[in-house]
Structure formats: C-alpha cells, structure tokens
Image (cartoon, rainbow, N blue to C red; front, side, top):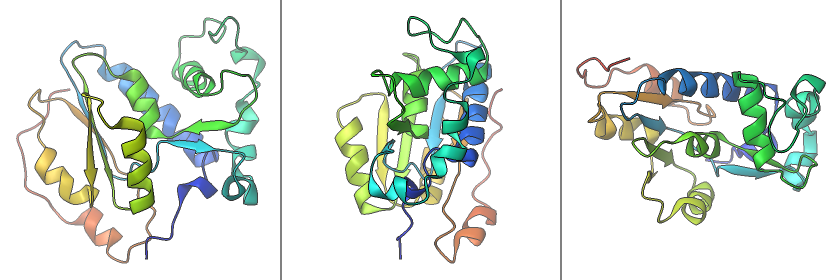
Length: 198
C-alpha cells in the first residue's frame, strides 16, 4: 500500500502537459485581482531530483521535459525565456528557476509551480497521504503563511476546504490510482456548494 512514488516518473510527457495546462489556467484566473485558493489533492514532495536512482531507472524525463528543455524558441537569456509570454514559456521559466546552474537536474512538481505563481491574496492547500512525501512537504513549506499542509486524504480535504471564502478556486486532482477505492473516491458526490466565481 502507498508504494507509488512520483520520483520515478517526474518530468515525463504527462507532467509537461499537465503542468503547462496548470500554468495556463493560473495565468487566466489571475487576470482578476480577487484571491484564489489552489488545492492540490495529491501534492507529492514538490521537487524532484532527476539525478536520483528512481528518476534514472527509466529516465522518463528524457521524453518529457528533456525534449523541450533546449528548444531554441524558448532559449533562456538573462534569466528570461526570450521574452515569450505564453504558458509554455512561463512553464519552462519556472522549471529553469529550479535549475539556475544551467543543466536540468531538478523538476518542480505542481506545489512548486503553484507556489511560484501565488500573489499576496492567493493561498495554496497541499494534501498528501504518503508519509515520506508529507515529510518533504513540511521541510519545504513549513512556516509559509500562504501554504496550508494537509496530511491525509485529499478527497476528504475537499469538503473541508471548499468553497473558498473568496469564491474563487482551482482544484488539481492527479492521483496515482494506487488505492482500490480511487475511482469511487473521484466519482462519489461530495456536498454541493454554491457555484464558484470565474
């Protein structure tokens, strides 16, 4: 039970797609000034070392972030991605911010990407069931006033955290499908709340 570790898969093609879409959604939502609550139900450890044995076992990052890391259109100049103002450019800039020495060694998960985008009025709720991943989240975010850590079931946290006081929120649900109850957990209705603002 709870043997899935995202470190084996960090930076793979699905991560690149998911994280680029996440950045695009955050950019769109932040066009309004009202605060947003971002809730990640399966946060993971937030940052992945691509030189660790688990990442190197299948090298899934080679076909994901590795394929676009050096795209000429997004080449990094003076810490900025060639002035590109789109979700892909910003996503790559956020990944590069975790790799300031140049080569790709670290891959930020959704908690790091979301934290980097928080404005003063925004808040981030990170849920994690796996004890080792919880420990990594505490080490990284403990004491951060804009981040709330929930050790436990992210689905149960939804009912406690929603709706946000601001009426604006984004929930990221990206489970490992390791638990037998996962499909039922995703599809079971939870208490209906008033509609969130766009």
